[in-house]
Image 1 (cartoon, rainbow over the protein chains, first blue to last red):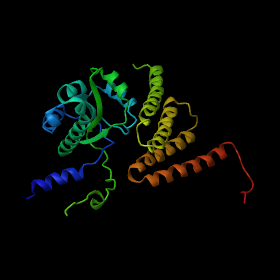
Image 2: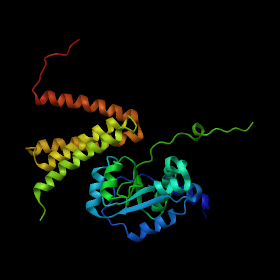
Image 3: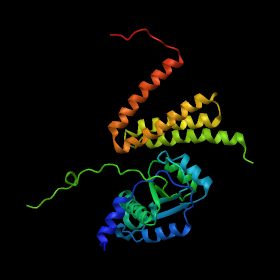
Image 4: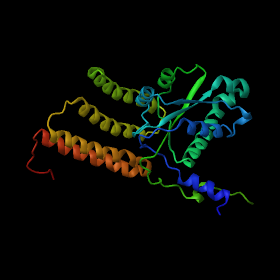
Length: 177
Length: 113
């Protein structure tokens, strides 16, 4: 029987960035399920400043793709745009939350979403190369919402090989004495 | 029925928005993304010209589609090996120079030594 650690490690290590999706539709319920769990991820001062915009409208997806150079590949994914309500973050967490923490919060949420999607047999692509101004305009987002990342969620058509990882010993330093 | 004119215009805008949003993003993105976007723009440009039907002759379309496939593979190299991506871009330019020489019918009798 696998330990919780082994199960979790396997989910993390087998997740790949998916660029080619199938044309199968992602059930709305799967997206709700993923986001319902993802919102249990941590935020500094329990700010919960993220806002998730889920785009399934084909025309809108095409328009978003047009302003997202980082979105390559085809298929029929749903786009979840992770935004931060910067005004909310500032009013509860001050400048640190508005200027720095919101990015960390979005990063944690993105990884959680990616892992949950992977556990459901879905693939994800986290995209940060897009015009924030254009996406804000297209989605008619409130002034205080900043789009931080687009996560595509869909059924993988091709699963790429993992890119190389740096050896652990190049990444860690122990200070023991 | 969809309007062919607006479909074609949309294809052109698809390319233009790729370039405009790249221009905006590249102020902040890693410098390697510049070459990456250029190569990806080549791939997208081929899509546009084929989509608009402005290339005559099956063999020319096939040639461009083959180039597009190579470009598609090339853009994925950056994530795995920036060195290989750089080599790819170099080879691409050598290959295109040869292609242009043929198209312009440039034939020098000997190499300079």
